Length: 126
Ligand code: SF4
Image 1: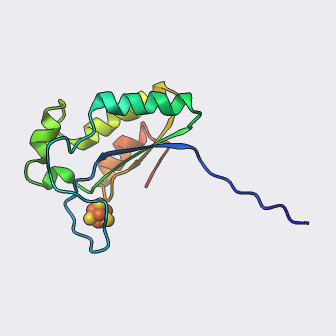
Image 2 (image 1 turned 180 degrees about the vertical axis):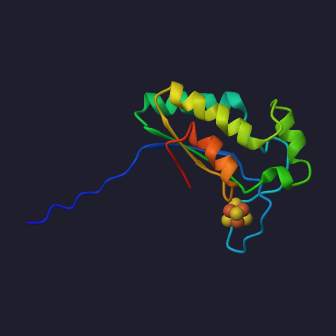
């Protein structure tokens, strides 16, 4: 008799923003710049803590590709004290590690240098 084994990783899903510079025809994720279009640090930390308490082992940070290239996004992010979303996800990755979660960042296409930097604080990237 065959036993079917299903594996999965319990992860916390943190869509830091749905703003994206691209326009993929099949996309149902992207939204325009608007008030509150960046997840606030308080919400992100609350999600990390609640997820850790529920036994999650991974923090999945995702966002559109190069949202900073979309007019108006920089101002929204600047209100949270960041000039670049990659700096924001770097700090949140450290916060995830502090809470026992392995960060996985899904940022779209990055340069080698950007990947190399995030590699310091990510268990994997997509
Ligand atoms: S890169 Fe991703 S988020 Fe951006 S438009 Fe394409 S599918 Fe949507």
